[in-house]
Image 1 (cartoon, rainbow, N blue to C red):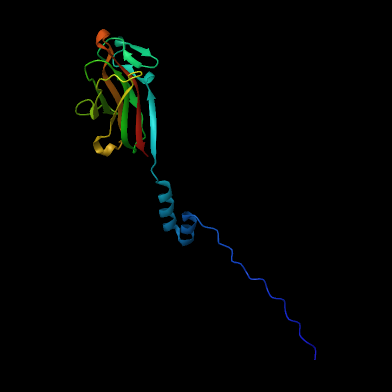
Image 2: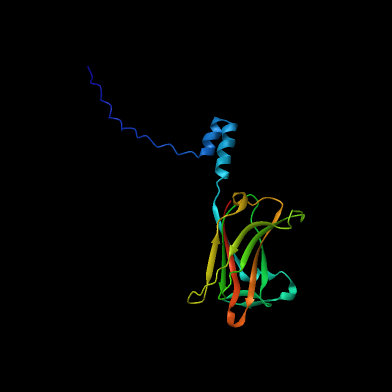
Length: 193
């Protein structure tokens, strides 16, 4: 009788790891309702953003007050003790987290900055609706008296609502001679969207 040949031993099979599927692909296999839920959770991630507005964006409330630029020191009104204003443009629905005003103030007074909003059709109980009041305290800080103040308290949880026009008004800017000077150097804002 002839001997049967032994079969060569088979190489051990190795399992390949299945490629990982994204949550949206997994949901697609399960059905459209789950796909919608997974896709919406991927697109609703809110992230923190920061914007900067330079001093050159600030203008006097009245054109007759004029303004003077000091490249490093910022901008002030040409007539002492006048306000400078700038629009604040943020996406509707974002949440304002912090507003930081950069300024110089070598006087003894503490002018106030107002973060305000007007209704887009200009109808509101007081003309403007206050979002924040920020004191610009005096100070001398070497090497160039660069000061900053941050506010984090805003109405409505800081949510930027539809149908409002927002702006920042910094009062009391100007050159007071030997009594000092108040200038706006800009503003930075942190928001979540």
